[in-house]
Image (cartoon, rainbow, N blue to C red; front, side, top):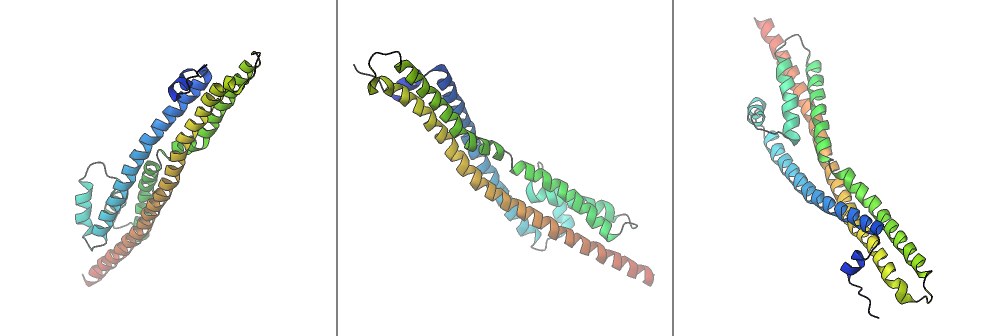
Length: 235
């Protein structure tokens, strides 16, 4: 007796629970791959924008002029968002002569930390889902496999003659669930590890920029306060 062992037939003949497990794994894989491609594009753009902004910022550009150009953009992100948040507070407080340079830099630092936190949340988006898929998919697939094999042996107990051909289709369809679990988990784990490392590097660059820019603003505030005091004495 010929038994159709094609992948389609094995899936179609699987029990309802095993089919449900397969559907869950397929959906998880599709969503995971969508997030993988999206995250790749997001990180690539973020790295490119960070390089471009650092080149302009450290080239000796006038900060007020750079602020006007950057703040005129829509949907600021990355270092530009952090820069605008910090320099906006610097300009606002610097007009008040009674505010000390340390207070100005501290307020600007807090504004940049808030902007940094938002950028971190954006960069880390999708990563928890990838980690979940990578860690749980093999177990979901294994559950489907165990259930399928259990049903195969239960059906075998009702037959008069126990042969390998009688249980082979059931075991094969059950093992497909394990294969699907691995297919969903392996790319998710690889992508999670890769993107986590890249995101950590970007966050480190952002954090370093915050510290360096805060020190620069503090030096400028102290210099302008000293110049104002000197003009007052001369006057």
